[in-house]
Amino acid sequence: MRNVKTIETDVLVIGGGGAGFRAAIEAREKECNVLMISKGPLARCGATPMAGADYTLDGKSMSKIEGLTGDPNDSAEKVFNDIVTQGCYLNNQKLVEQYIKRAPQCLKELMDWGLKVKLSDERMIFTTGTGMMNVLLRKAKSVGVDLLEDVAVLELLTHENSVVGALGLNVLTGEFIHFRCKAIVMATGGWHKAFWPNTGMRDLSGEGIAMAHRAGADIGNMEFITFCCNTFYAPPMWRGSIAPYIISLICGGRLTNNRGEDVLKGYDSFLVEKGTLTEWNKSFLSFVTAKQARDGKVFANGGLHYTRGDASWEMMELVASMVFPNWKYKALDLTEWGRMLQENEPVEVGHAVEFFEGGIVINDQFETAVAGLYAAGECALGTFGANRVFAAITEIFTQGADAGNNAGEYAHNRQSADLDLSALKELKEKALQPLTVSKGERPAELRKRVQRKSQRYLGPIRNRDELETFLDYLEDIKVSVLPKLSTTNDSRTYNKEWMDALELPNMIQLLESSVRSALMRTESRGVHYREDFPDTDNDNWLQEIIVKHDTATFQLNQRPLTITSMSPPTGVTPYLDFMKQMMEAHSDTGGKH
Image (cartoon, rainbow, N blue to C red; front, side, top):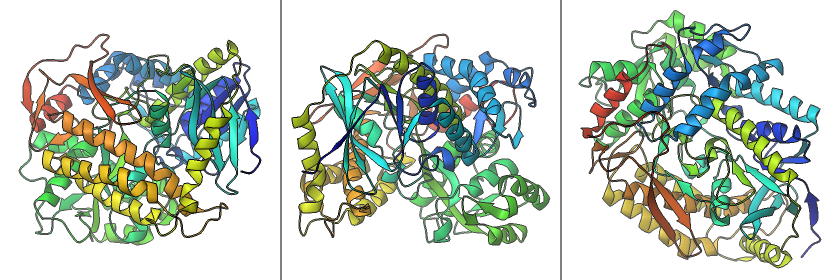
């Protein structure tokens, strides 16, 4: 075994997106030594650079920030009502309160640091994900955060249920790195890579949630997965892009199936209005698209046709000029799509994985069940319940700031513990195994098969038979295939195939927890729809599903909701009727959220 570099710090932040940067900045301002690890290039990996990016807060607070408008008649109480009802009451209400309270301050800080706002509405500002990351990178460097890019963390190290460090891998050189620390903030985002298509970066494979789970943290509500509607399905180079989603949300348009039918005809008119021109569209239109697919009414790639319909071309062109200058978006040239919109020619669109409501169980201090381990952002459970309508961007900044602050305070009162070298040796040998196995399963081929099955069996519409079929498949993969993963060469230098092999066990772990949770939740709520249990059941299922991990299996339990001021109603209601009730419960504040 080669010599291994050891790096010591007070607070280790794992994740190079917005939550990670914000946690690192705050922990550093507590006068701690802070190291932030990015799996890819600094400020260009994770979910944040790919974000739309909208930031939500209450309009009254927004109107008090210089340069912004906002609705002065909005309030924190109205936003609380809207997040909880749109989350179908499964939200952790303490975390909702934290989101609302911290949002104005965190936005003001970003603007003071140089963030540029492109446009806004009653309770939202719109900017760019890359713009946010540029601001954060400059700020982190200015306050003295140590930054390490192109390093994947493979496992957390604990002693007596406290974190003491981690094992990392330089993905360019293949060298292992030992990290010794007093506290860790997990800010690794979601697990988009377990599905295809998805709207995330290729590095979002869920290792942060999986590592925390193996280290002793609980995870929860893993059945709730948001699919973004109206993402490109064709042509292949555009597949997964959310550009049509953005245009359709702001300007409208028309969806038709392979029979030329308007797919929204026959649905309640109020559902259609709110479910297309507000952020309810993700849950509603993804459900509609999945239903069309089950009825065999989709096109060659499994999607629907989107056209401008009766929507104004002038409005679309104006919006595009602000959001897609010169019809360029996230390195894609969409000039041809602009022409197609103007001529009302169709493109094929459908649902793609975008956000995970479930994740690492935390309290209102962002602590997990493992001492010294904190979590923030999309990898953490709680804020959005069963359906996210308000902005995830706000969550990553508000939670990242407080998690970093609390981790910094914790680290001040701790001494660094020695690393268990024998445990590290075993972990490294396990990580190297795919390089030594001959004639085994190729990681990329397995990943593609898993992604296709995830999209099919764990999409917006589920049922027991399909979930059990998928669970049997995952269990077979875990037992029979993962131990035999094999790379085509044994080089450790920038071996993408090896990275696939290291990521796959994490994705299988999270998929299994999600499927088991989806089987356990015998109702339909938010972004979880069961064909065989098509009602929202507030009499029996106002509960969170918590998944505990041991070396052999998962244990699933229910726990009560965290309620501060809004008690959910009782009763059993058909799914779309309940969705409509939650839409109608929205406050009188306008806007897309």
